[in-house]
Length: 336
Image (cartoon, rainbow, N blue to C red; front, side):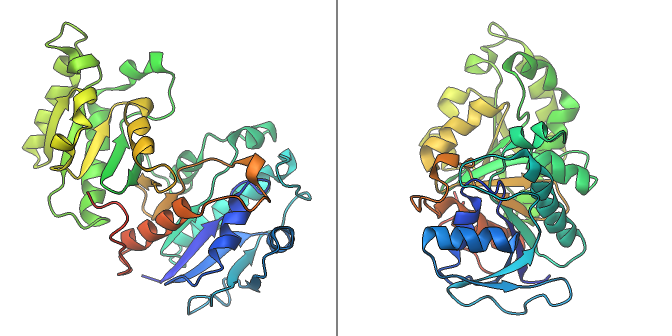
C-alpha cells in the first residue's frame, strides 16, 4: 500500500484551500498531494500572508517522501474561472468534480492509499447543471459501489447512519430489513478491517421514542428492526438493541461499545457534533477505497480571513492514515 494520500480542497471560494495551506506549515508523517489548482493555492497563500512552497507533481513523478514543513505537493488541476474568497461561481463546479474524480481514480489505480476531502458546496454544483448530491454518492458511483455508509467519529464516539439525507417523513419507509442488514454488515466489516477491532460491539437505536414502547409508539422496532438484528446476530454480529436513542447516548452504554448505528441523520449526529464539533471526521464506509472528510461546511464567510481551525482536517488525515493501515495511528482520534 503506498504511503501517498490525496487531499481535495473542495469549493475553491470556501475555506478548503486555506485549510490545505495552513496544514502545510507543519510536516506530515506521509506524503500528501493536494489535487487542486496551483493558481488558486498560490493566490490564496498570498492573500493569507503565508509563505508556502508549492511543489508540482504528476502521476509521472509522485513524491516518495513527505513534503518538508512549509511546503505542499500539488497535482495541478486548472480552474474554470477566477476565484474570489466567499463568492460562489458555478463555472467552477466542473473543477470541483474533476479534483474528486482524479483523487478517487488515483485511489482505485493504487497511486493513493486514501483520499481526504475538504467541504464542497452542493448547491453551486447543481446550479452548474451537474446533478450532485454529495461526496458519498459521487464516490459510490465512481467506484461502482451499490451501498455505502456514512459514519462520523470523534474521540470516544462513532455514529453510523442507516439513512442519511432524507426528509423526516420518508425515513420510516426507507428503513427496511434488507437496508438495515446491508448497513450493519458494512459497518461491522469496516470496523474489523479498517479500524482493527476484532469483534466490534454495535449499539442500535430504535426509530421511535422509547424504541416504540412495545408497539404503543410505533411498530417498526417489532416488525422490521428486531427481526433484522436477530438475523444478523445469527451471522455473528454483536448488536445491542434496538435501544431508545434518548438513553443510548449516555456513558453507561457508550463505554461498552465501538459504534452506534442510528436510524436517521438527526437522531445520531447532533449528539456527536455536540461532543466533538471541530475535532470530528466524516468517514465513508463500504467503498473499496479510504475516504475521510472534515465535519464542517465551506464557511464562505471565513474564506481568506485566516480565522479558521484545522482541527477537523487534521483528524480526517489521521483517520485516513489509520484506515489505510499505514501504521500512523493517533490515540486522539476515534478510539472509544
